[in-house]
Image (cartoon, rainbow, N blue to C red; front, side, top):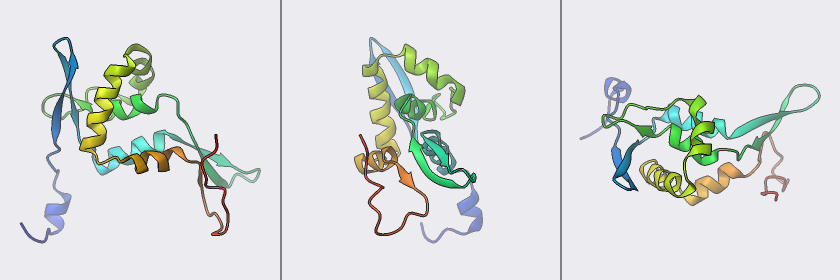
Length: 141
């Protein structure tokens, strides 16, 4: 295959789907995210922080349901159609064991090339328009 033209680039891509064994003869399917899905997921774990003038200053990381948010945007049926909605992540997070969710997340991370560095970068507080000599982008505990 060679250089892709406009038509080829805009054509719906077949996303890879993987079966994830959850034990006790239970399983789910997890798929690759589209670029849009990835943006939605990343945005879901950030909250805008604005100054008194309403200007965006920073993003605050929202860790609550971090794993469930990734699971919701990757769990699918055998054909790759998502089966959960964004509104389902709190319920999923409260009702699934951490061990089972971790199996799903591990598969989702592998399929979507989410590295440990990517996770660390997402979990840091991001600063918009930060000066080059500022050190305020370091992770705070």
